[in-house]
Length: 183
Image 1 (tube, one colour):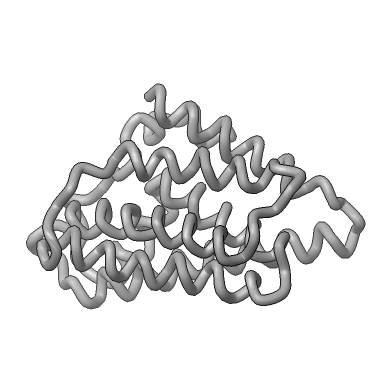
Image 2: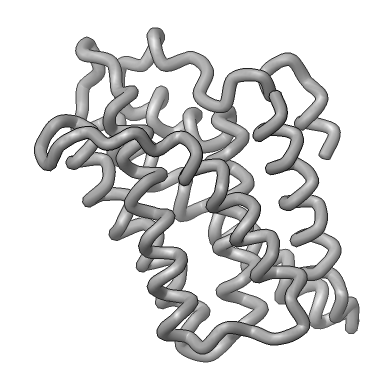
């Protein structure tokens, strides 16, 4: 939540002009606050739901990021999507705080839908001078690591019987998303 008040919060996708390759791709998911929140939320949800969702939700998000990035790079057209990217943060946070879980198939559809638009946003903002394949590899690697960090956090919280952790994290995601929306 503290990150939301930093000057970087006013620009959800900073530092695109300096992107060159693998390292730039790896840093973007961490400095793009909307992507950071969405990636962590997907990890929280997948561990919270457990079972097949544990691997299926992060794999869906990463797969849809790839398709969306290709679309954003001009392979499939360029719709306006920034509002959908920010909406994903609010929807994912809502899924985290809800006392009832969506069925796995519905969760996969929601996460995949928003993953496409996250990918599109990042693909369309990819600078011309970037080494595309390295940037994408770095971006996807860090996105996956963010999922796994959140998943590990939920597992540790369960071990210590902190069952409401995901709901609190969901509230923080929603609050941060609202601050991004307003900024």
